[in-house]
Image (tube, rainbow, N blue to C red; front, side):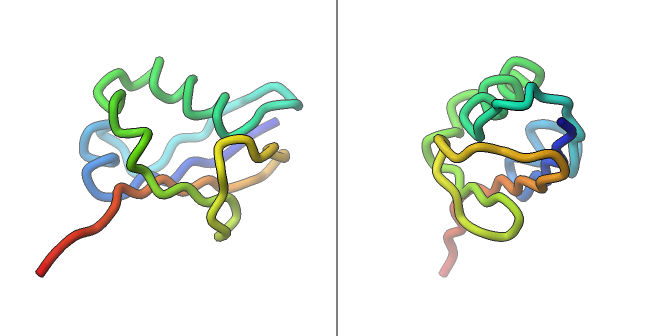
Length: 81
């Protein structure tokens, strides 16, 4: 299946791209996608625990199953004053 991953803020800066398209096995979960993304972009390792994750516009936990055509968004927490 084909998944689109949108990267935001410092996550995008570390990966060097705003969007990634990835082929995954049919039984893939968000956790599996993150494992693969970290292997491709080692500079993003260590950020996973603080990421906000969504699938098709809805916040998601890492155990959620992915489907062909899904869009995953990965956003670090935002702070400011």
